[in-house]
Length: 193
Image (cartoon, one colour):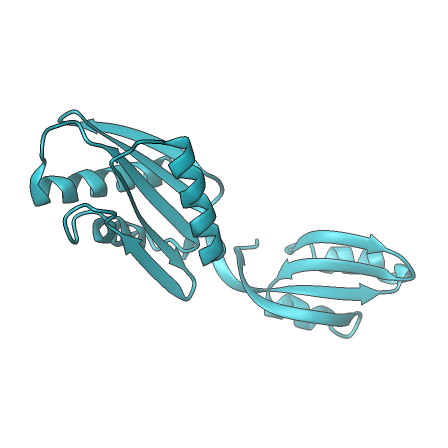
């Protein structure tokens, strides 16, 4: 399973139609709505805003007025073929006056999607955990060492040390006798070394 680091854009012209592929990392369906609204504002007057997305437990697509199954499904097929999760790919089309036909549309949307994925920096993802842990200051050096292959998202120093971390179940289990675990949520995280 793979994800992407950041937004990328790729542009392709086929028979006077401009196809603009945009890939963005997402975490929820709310992210999809927000990104689509932003893109519709940024790329005004486009003919179509076709897209597909994959989340860890969901996926979807839209042909946005293109003939049925000629845009959204080809985009989704390329995303799934690359084992990507938590991504949204939008292919914006400005119609150039020449009809491409169903086969031509499928090729155009697939080609744009492949190109934008190839341009992206892919990262390996794993099923992990986000957790909040609290411990005594005297254990900080040891905890930092044990978390060397984890992501420490936040450190709070009050009466005790409190960290928000992204890690694996194995690492969290290995420190459980040294810390108080305040909460744990399952989360897709970058693969840790």
